[in-house]
Amino acid sequence: MPKQVRKKRQRESDDDESFWRVPRTYRISVLREHMEKVLNLISVLREHMEKVLDNFTFYDVPDPETADFVLTYTTHGLKGSVRQAKIGEFLQNLRDHGLVVRKAPSVLYPDLVFVLITGSNSLLKQYAESFGIMLSCDNPYHEKEQPGLGRALECRVHTIDVNDPEFARAPATYSGERPTDITVHEKIMDGYPLHHAQVNWTEEGALSDRQILARYWANPKYFFQRQPINLIEKYFGAEVAFYFAFLGHLIFILWWAAGLGLFCFVYGLMTLTSPQNYRSFETCASKLIMCPTCTNFEVCKYVPLMLISIWTTVSMELWKRRQAALAYRWNVFSAHIDLSMRPEYAMTSHLKRFSVVTGEWEPYEDSKVRYTHLFVSYSVVILLAVLAISVIVAIRLYLSVMRKILATSKVTLFREYSQLIAPSTASLISVTIMLLLETIYVRLAKVLTELENPRTETQYDNSLIYKRFALTFINGYAVTIYIAFFQVDVFTN
Image (cartoon, rainbow, N blue to C red; front, side, top):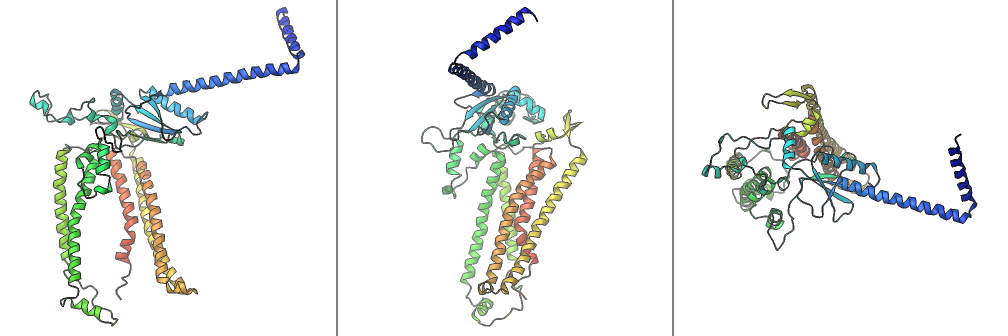
């Protein structure tokens, strides 16, 4: 062994012996001092790492600016966990792709954190082109630039200025699903576009569209007032505005039918005891219990059908006129259906083919896989429809069995009120099952539509609407159809 190594070890052993020769209290104080230094160093490193991670992931802004999208997560139970690292990694990946990520803490709930995400116009345009989302369209009517008056009168749809507040992305964004798989393992709670302006009424300053709509439209006090349909179109878009315009038109047209029905009802009450109404007068005045020989006697049998036909035709023609006027006013008269590809379809379709229309390779789904998904989806819808009908049949059987059990019961109260208890319990069970199935149908319709994986957003919306309408119709009107067409008429022999 070299001399230097032996001398070094000798010194270390001497130091150890000298340390153990000192009093025990002194040794404990020295160890305590060293431990305190180590703990202080660990706490300083922890604070430093938290600051570095926070600054590395976010930009702290005291006054949040307008953002394109907002993500929300909670800090409860996140400190030092794997989920916190996953959130930081996810948001850092967004920054690496060019997005600006800022953090805004919640005012009312300290555990909530809002992440404001903003992207530049060039970045959004780049990703829109990669996903096949059309942001502009060619103008076939004005291919060349027209100076002077023609340039001034050119439609704003074809001359969008990205710096114009009218075309700002975040305030104009209303519809849209949150990013796919954004809430995996509940790392991020929710994601939504950012609303602009406040909704509460203010006495000073300019009023926003939200304030006016909340005060004069979404208020029961102004139920009989005309809808601010142009302001609805400005804030929500043409699709939502057309829905509320049709709803207002339908209510207006229904007033005509309601007025005519009220007139007929009052006329019937006034002529109930007249000599012309001898059939009803003799039947009501007589104490003899008898069964009528004619159970399908009706006066003016075809008049209601004629009135309904005329009312439907007039209402539809008036709505077409109203729809054309609104479409011309909102500059959507020549709007085309959006045929751009859904991002979810592009991500889940692993095959590609050359498109003759676009001249590019586009993702597509194999026909066998697509037809298999459609078969499974529509089979489940048919199965759910059969389930709803089976529930109605089961409730009818329950009603019959319950009536017999109560009629032969030893309890006097059950025997006397068997005709009331049995239908009441059957109706309660029917309503409970209908509400439960309605909740299941809404969620299952979305799952089945996502399983089909339609190519465009329009196809997705249509498929979802058809499923919800079919399931809701069967669930809501199965009882009515059964009573109207299958149940034995209780008023005849």
